[in-house]
Image (cartoon, rainbow, N blue to C red; front, side):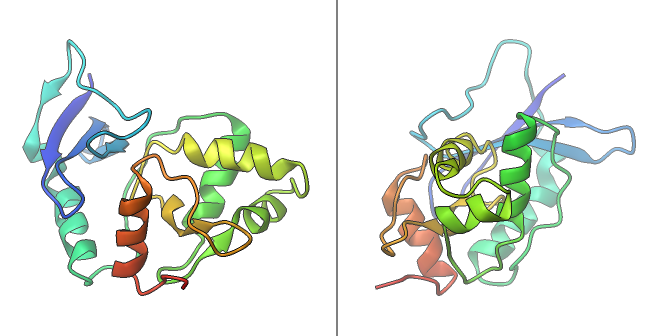
Length: 165
């Protein structure tokens, strides 16, 4: 059964969705922002369970106040093999830094024309904020494509001290 909760933050009310693991932890499947392109929506049969997300919410609060630079969460296994490779590469981008789409493409073995496929995979990242797709920028240093909106991408990079101007 999918569990969900809402968590307030500086980007708006975030929707967290996941499932309870056998060890009692919550496996995070989605973190969506208000108005996010392709974001999750609460469905029939989902159970509102704010207590299941207490630890995740605490990590988000610590991140937004500058006290956490890397999340320690259990993520649901989703996406295609290629998407998972791209998403793992995102998780390796250090706090406070940026990389280009081309650099991610090279890291996953898809340079050149693979940049477009990498952009598509990044756009399908179900875990905004915690899986840092906001750290990926255009080759010219411009902020490009963020499902939560470019103003939120700019805000996250500003929080991390990584704005490129």
